[in-house]
Length: 416
Image 1: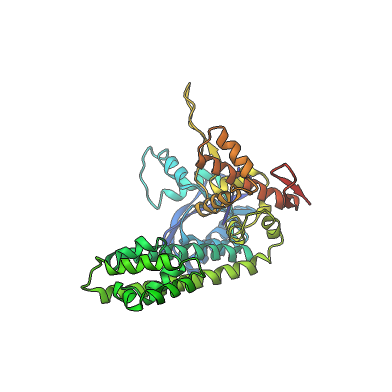
Image 2 (image 1 turned 120 degrees about the vertical axis):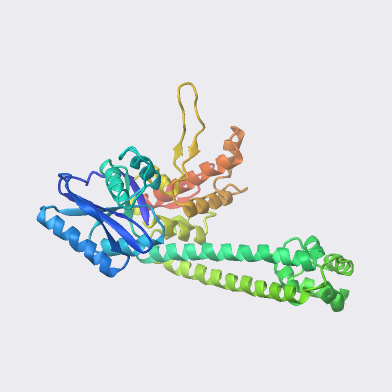
């Protein structure tokens, strides 16, 4: 879902304001008319029957009060809300979302108490919406929705793979600790092959030095040779790895390697599908025209944003990523400017890694990055500044229907 920061001017005398406090199994629904009359908070189950019951109540209230539109508000939540939101979107209801931090602070104004109940929260959400502090929600459709799901699936797969590598590292340290000293990168193809076929020190010794040298040369395509083989052979000769229980350890090592290979294949399939869905989004090629921005980054950014065309200003889109700046100053004290981090964390991560690519020597933002550093800006803050700039460029390319062109002696030029 995408959030756009706007004052909700459409909450007016013709609008029925409905709110829902989300839960896993049931929701608490509430409605408020323009004259401040209320529909009491009522619970309904998280299923089609419950959705219909709440919808019928809203339609009846809207009709009897002569209102024109229904605005449904909710607090930012996990996956439990998505079926309900899709149901109401299909009914033509305007969906809005409030920040949980705002809910927490405003609820203390109601009764001067931090008391949290299902009866209180929907009313607090309505108060926040009436004050204009809410975000309009746009649910991704078509290719953008697929890209969002693919990006999240890829992120989860990579986290699972990282966890497996960490566990693999621990097991290898138990059975053959010297292996990690010789083969520095356990993620490398050569290290994984050796662990799959010759995980024990005795297996390395049984293979022999000459065959080990040949295996390493073949798997690494010539990058590793006699020196590495000799070091590994000597390490196996003097290993202090455990001997008791090693059969079970090696069995688990192989199982983990199979899991890692499975994750690799799954990530490849996801990335292949990303490429196909990007072709369905006309402006994706404009984003891909930025040198150093990969298809994975573009797919992830579009999936998180949903549709760049719904944003009018750079400020709006930076808020979505939590890259908008704030400072805490009072009197003579002037605080440091920081990013809010109140937006989408995955979107922020994608842009940060895109910035890392862009500031490399020969990258489109290398000069700008070096200027930030020359001014004394810390590296992390300089990278955040580059991430903000890249996101702004993406929005500009879509809005102007342009493709990125790096002109001589300039960092950025946009040409149609």
